Length: 296
Image 1 (cartoon, rainbow, N blue to C red):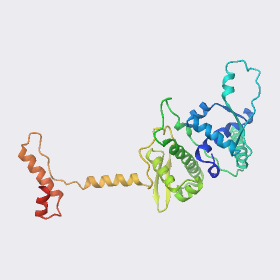
Image 2: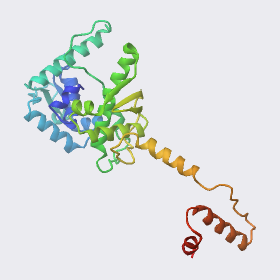
Image 3: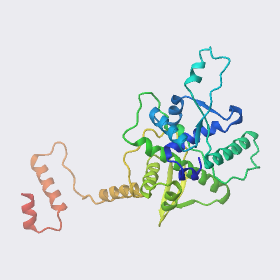
């Protein structure tokens, strides 16, 4: 994907378009994408209805167009059935779609040639999105609530951050520091969405970061293996997990010490004395009359 892609498409359409364009701009495949809806669902982690609706929107926006199905001499063979039910798509006439596919073709040609030193001059910066982490293990595995949309966004932001961190580690040798407003304007998402995604990526262990004023310093980015298990909750404040951990630590330190709980064979009178002394130590700022009334 490219960061400029989200100025034209939402994350669902961007996923479908970038996946189709990867094959539709390949000269070896005739510049046509031939795959079924089930194949798109398996690779992208979307439902069939979501994929079909995304293709319709992309065709209306002229990012994609339907290609003509050529008659094959092997039409009587059984495997011709999959060619009949497959989508036949090619790059549309939209200006950005043409620019995207043209530069992606240059990137793929350079990678296949194996010439790492000669890099094409591109207007867009491409980064990999590891969407395979969202693939289901079984057919019965389904998303919980709205986790699909959030985790697809999370992998997009992870791919962008991973590409930036990899570049800085190789050339700049400094930590990646970005602000939430910058990421919000780049991805065309709200600032709360950016904060929630960063918190989710931190929670599932894909990134490590710290907040320095208004900027987020990303100290490490890990490769995703499987993130379909999802997250516990969405949080709109950065470092909320660290704050909750410190609060729990402080609460532990404030527990009264020096009181030994009676043993297993203690008498009822010893247990009653322990409870009374525990209540007395937990209310140090109250007067004796108020403490007596609370105990009653």
